Structure formats: structure tokens, C-alpha cells
Length: 332
Image (cartoon, rainbow, N blue to C red; front, side, top):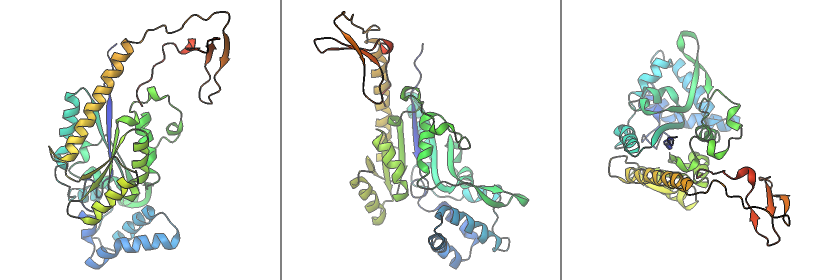
């Protein structure tokens, strides 16, 4: 049987990671007067604090309110949001990064998928110049009602809920409307994307849960900073010092730059691991059970995660469990 190609998943935050500003600033905010544009986030965050509410829900509500008060200058239909997305600006190298690194992976025999995990708006990302490159965009979205105008949140992604999407990718349960399967136990070797093959790119404190999860499970977490902005660099350095990320890199996705080089080496590592695993399987005898004499007694392991019949001889040597003689595990 032909071995399956390994899958690598690269997951990105959006604002400050792929784009230097908030995505709303490149389209939606242009319909606001300067004063309201300047105070939007201050007003939104202040209201969330006053109400003890989720800041993401409040900013979505405020976008609807601002549109209603704009006298027709701002629209909130899906078409409007996608049009705003066309104006989003990106860091150097971003626009040709996705196809370029995917080709590198394909040439190495690796399937590579790109994902967005962001508290921004899904329709803005879809409408942007890079929207077509993502397998899935996990982001906030609206229910659209009368005249297709936004009237209620359909999906909300905040910094604590972001991690569920990593598990969805890991387990192959990518439909965010399906709530049951994401918590089902799946054997590590049956998960299509092991965490060791997941990369996460973020830029700040709201990315910490995802960064930490990926890093602790053997994946690769990147803190991205804006060149020339000391605060951005200091944030990334703190994330590294606190053990949240593996790498601190400038936000330049151009060929030959640090991000490009590191990701290519990680893809090479996945290839080497996969080849070693496949060759190692060939070198393992199919029957690893030694005959047990009558002097040996059976017992069950007390390990809370392992209940396997085993045999122990007087010499103290353990024999392999018969029911797991051919069991092998993918690196995880």
C-alpha cells in the first residue's frame, strides 16, 4: 500500500501577523469621520469593560451601530464586507507566500494547508487579495437579515476559543458548525494532522493559548513583529522569554527571509521524520512475542492509560503484549 503524504497545517492570526493594521481600518473605518474612527476601539473596549462583556461581541455590535448612524455611507452586507477586504494591506512577501510555500511542500511530497484563526471578520478576509489561499477561515461572522444587512453575530472567535480550531484541524473535524466531534477521543495515529506538523503564527497576547498549545505538543509557534516598531518587537521577545513560542521573526514573508527559511526547514523535518517512520516499520519484526514459560505469570499494567495483558518471568523481563504485537505509532 502506498504511504499517505504527510500533511502540514500553517495557522495564522491576521491583524499584526499578515497585515500591519486592524482589517477594519482599511475599508469599514473609511466611512467614519475622523473622530469616530479614532475613538472606535476606545469606545468599544470601554463598553465591554463596563458591561463585563466579551470585547469581540461588543466591537461587532458597534460596527452595526456605526453603520446605522452613517447615513448610508457604510454598508454591512456580505458584499460590502468583501469589498472592504479588497483594500487590506499586507506585510512584505505575504501575497505570493501561500502559493510559493505550498509548491515547495508539494515538491517534497507534502500536502500543505493554510488556515486563518482570527477574531477579525471572515468576510473581510474572504474578500481580501489572499482570501482564496485558505482551506478554512475561522473568524467572526454575522447573520444577515433584512436587505442582507448584518444584524446578529453568527460566529465569534476570541482568544480562548481559538484553540478549538487547532484541535479541529488536528482531528480532521473542520466544520465549525459541528460541535460534537471536536471533543471525541481520536487515537493519535488516526489524526490527519499531528501537532508536530502544525505551525502557528501570531503577534500578541491574544495568541498565547494557541502558541502555547502548539509549542507544548511539539509543533512550531512563531511570534511575528513589525520591523521598526519597538513595542511589537518587545512583545514578541516577551512571548519567547515566557516560553510561549519557538521563534521570534520579523513580519517579512519574502523568499529567502527568516520566515521562508524556517518554514522550509520544518517541512524538510516533516519529510525526514516520515521517511524514518516508514523505514523503521520495515525494520520491526512482525512477531515480537517471546514464548512464555509456565513459570511466568500474567498481569495487567496498572498504568491508568494502559490496560494490556503482559507476561513477567522470574528473571524480571517483560514480554510484549500479544494483542499489540504489530502496534506502531506515528510521531506525535
